[in-house]
Image 1 (tube, rainbow, N blue to C red):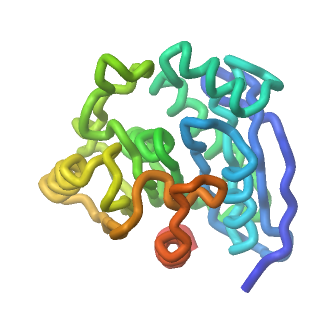
Image 2 (image 1 turned 90 degrees about the horizontal axis):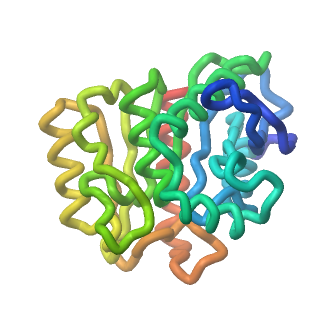
Length: 246
């Protein structure tokens, strides 16, 4: 079933009480719904990721995507804001978690919310979705080709991302992970390290690895897009959300 929806640019309180920009998409023809925090990829708060938020609403879930770069470059294009954030080493982990806390609170305040919230993230957002799931009481966590979960960024990369796999014991929600067999960030070896850590910690998780796909295979506007993998992946996403957040 495809739902009617409304999508708006809003402001809400993020980390430290800061007023930050976000993109909110909600179904308008349901009495109650689960919700999801959409964590954008490294290229930023852009139109393709807003399309993902609308897709969640069309499938009956409220979705809020915080603009993680709002403080660095308010009102800038997604490309310029991303460049500014990269020049400063990326989004600090503590601030990211605070922004997700604010997004969760806003989603739960919606009169049609059923009180359950998931997270999903793409690329660097995949790492951040996992991090949020380890530190916050989310009901479900989705990681889409999240790099630098099991390793730190190397010196030649202009970001200051540290491995977060050591926080795995804090994960309290089921996790769904998507990976491309041809990806190198995360590489198949890094994915197996991630898998081993989740298994050792006794966590509930499902990993899907797609042959012939690399990084960013969900991204319809990029050469990396793989329609078959993305279609199957979206099917898995909504099956998972139906089970975890209703």
